Amino acid sequence: MSSMRVIVTGGAGFIGSHLVDALMKDKRYKRVIVIDNLSTGRYENIAHWEDDEKFQFIKADLARMDDINEIFRDADIVFHFAAESDVRIGVKNPEKLWQDNIVATFNVLEAMRVNRVRYIVFASSSTVYGDQVKLPTPEDALLQPISIYGASKLAGEALILGYANTFKMRSLILRYANIIGARLRHGVIFDFITKLLRNPDELEILGDGTQRKSYLHISDAISATMHLFKKFLESDNKFEIYNVGNEDWITVKEIADIVSEVVGVNPKYRFTGGVEGGRGWIGDVKLMLLDITKLKNSGWNPSMNSHDAVRKAAKEIYEELGSSYKT
Ligand SMILES: NC(=O)c1ccc[n+]([C@@H]2O[C@H](COP(=O)([O-])OP(=O)(O)OC[C@H]3O[C@@H](n4cnc5c(N)ncnc54)[C@H](O)[C@@H]3O)[C@@H](O)[C@H]2O)c1
Image 1 (cartoon, protein in one colour):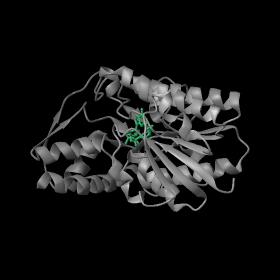
Image 2 (tube, rainbow, N blue to C red):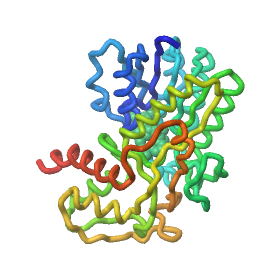
Image 3 (cartoon, rainbow, N blue to C red):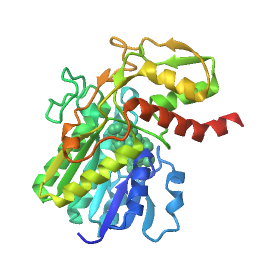
Image 4 (cartoon, protein in one colour):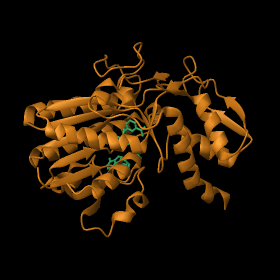
């Protein structure tokens, strides 16, 4: 493909907006269209591109087919990154995950089929694995999600593979570990910073603090994504699945220590104790470390480990949030 027209769903969100930055700077991509309903995404994440002719933003709900079909005309590639990204929401509102993660993915695939769009890159998640005995967990592990969110991402993967096989699409599925950095507005680091800005003396920690997971900085996540897609374009493969994560992991208690240091406070920790042996909430995977051998064999390596990524992300998010809380 000489000049590629790209749709980024969820392009106003955390990962999506950083992906948009990379695609906008890459001359191989002629047009970048963001579709987002701004439910959790923020227009300010992409506003710096609004005067660029290559860029277009369309506010639309992917869960409503009528809103999106026409937009996919003339597109070559879809980076499907829109989703309800809060894992915890499944406990109270599973319907939201059905609509934003499963119905929306079906609608994207239908719009691709009707408009003959060939490529899809899907932001899947480590949560499709659920609780694994084998750590680090390779791509061919049994997929047994323990949350509705994980189930919805797995449903997305399954739909994509079915469509790719039936309608000659090509699909790249990326199972991200915890991705962190500037613009992030959910997850443990954001939670700790906002709590400490409200009360620097005490920090509530969901669960028992021993949950241990792998974290990848957004700069590495985007660089891996662009690298893997380039490789995929050069290959003849109909579909590929990659874990995209780090080689080490870090506990929630260690994250609390780093975030407290970045914020410059020394709070008393109050552990909620959590559920089912210290999980933060029902469906919280306690131990997550992805096997990234396949990613590394493709010629890509993380530039920083989980600890450094957490520190960098905490500084970035604190800088973004700090000033508004201090005024
Ligand atoms: N952040 C992580 O650690 C992580 C890890 C694994 C996978 N993922 C996946 O990566 C993707 C991006 O996650 P994120 O962390 O950037 O979350 P995010 O909430 O910042 O981004 C999701 C975006 O999708 C949009 N969106 C949601 N429902 C929509 C709908 N019905 N129609 C149109 N737009 C809609 C939101 O407004 C938001 O801009 C998601 O698919 C998520 O499941 C994220």
